[in-house]
Length: 190
Ligand code: URA
Image 1 (cartoon, rainbow, N blue to C red):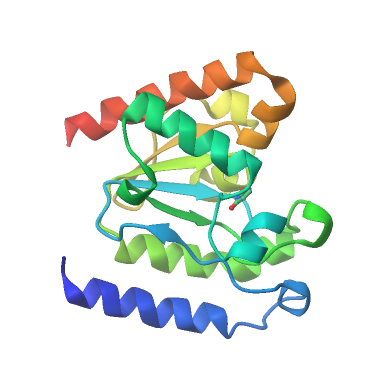
Image 2 (cartoon, protein in one colour):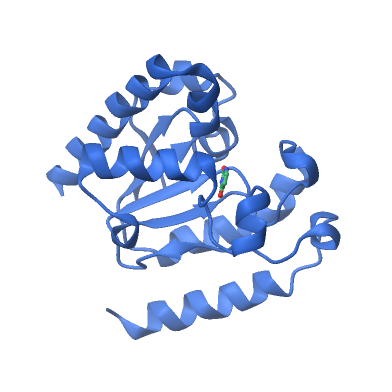
């Protein structure tokens, strides 16, 4: 791997770890920056860390994350080490509330810069916050599903948040499998 990518990302991560630009910095245990490979073809973007992620320092390690990672393994055959994972907002909103627009606006330059550094070509936007941030559409996840959006030089596929699948059951999980199938199609084109 190109070492300059590693160094540039490390510097960005350190900047995020020092960030106090919004109120979430006051209640976080730690900044949850990313996990996985910098040279991965697939980049997964979620909303914001929850309690488990705030404790662990890794995105998508709680119940939602276990489901998401299981579906990615099942449909794409990729384990956690084989793709890159991050969130739009890097610090946990207390009580697991949705991040506010001002918090998304303040934090999303970190995501933008991560995406500029990463070479992967396919983004899976997980849930409404990631989907709207990356596509700039103000429509529901349901309406965005099945379309290929672009963000810079990358293609974006939208899917439901796994927390919704945990509440909504099998049908939502099956829809996520379909979306991951689209991701698989894009990955195999590259
Ligand atoms: N939900 C998210 O959107 N991201 C995480 O990292 C954990 C839960």
